[in-house]
Image 1 (spheres, protein in one colour):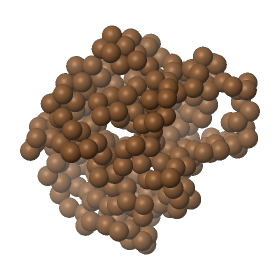
Image 2 (image 1 turned 90 degrees about the vertical axis):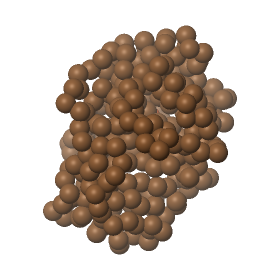
Image 3 (image 1 turned 45 degrees about the vertical axis):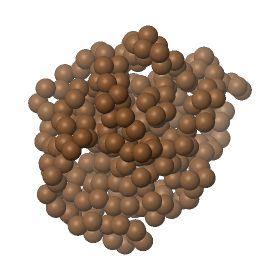
Image 4 (image 1 turned 120 degrees about the horizontal axis):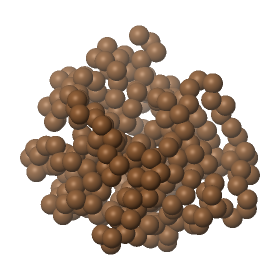
Amino acid sequence: MNDARVTAVRSVELGVRNVESASGFYSDTWNLDPVAEVDGARYFRGTGPEHHILALHRREKPALIRVNLAAPDAESVDVLRARLSAFALPELGMPGELSTPGGGYGFAFADEEGRRFAVSSDVAAHADAADSRDRPRKISHCVLNAPDMERSVALFTEGLGFTVSDRTGHLCFLRCNSDHHSIALGTGDAPTLHHIAFEMADLDSVMRGAGRMRDAGYPIEWGVGRHGPGANVFSYFLGPDDYIIEYTAEVEQVDDSYPKRSAEYWATLNPPGWTDRWGIAGPPSERMKAAQSRIAFA
Ligand SMILES: [Fe+2]
């Protein structure tokens, strides 16, 4: 079982200053479904089978608490834990039964730059997993800023079994299933959160979500557009506590035959000045630029 690897990003856990109001936003406007409340923390599911894809915890200031990763079974969890012991991680827990909503078996760790993750298997899944055109399915990807890009890439590839799909001048896209990327690492001064993307059923769902957000007072901060690497359509917003959140869809489905392309390829794919494949997205807003390195791990 030496080829054990992570197979998905299950969920993200965010620290918010006001759990009640943030929960209202994520259920009524972002359109997730509340699924559990434990010790003041709220858990939300998408339409997919994952037990929950978002957890909100009360914190004095916004902070990314943890990114939860999936492994296919308990044996894989144990193999991954053993493999990570070769890295100089400041924290590496022992695998055990989980008491978080959905249960399962897993362990938590902090990486060399202080980001917190957990790997788990056997988490309870929902049987009702039909798409809804106005609700997110799952976490599509997280983008994390990485001061030491190569050290972080090595942890994800050699430690957790991810594959590099593409690199641009400042981003490395990492896959762990057929999605072109589930994690991306961006060059940055600190190990902060760039953004979290939620997968919608299709382009139409992204557009309808953008309309719903605009009606609720959340303007599009970047988009709508279609990215280069991954070819996913995107629309970015600032949610409660200025977390950058993205509705996305149609991410390219790839396998081992995918031809990783050069940074030069991506830099010259579009005409000069375009920030997406359609040439309509323009640059991110100043508000979004200010928020894309503000959230640290707790
Ligand atoms: Fe994204």
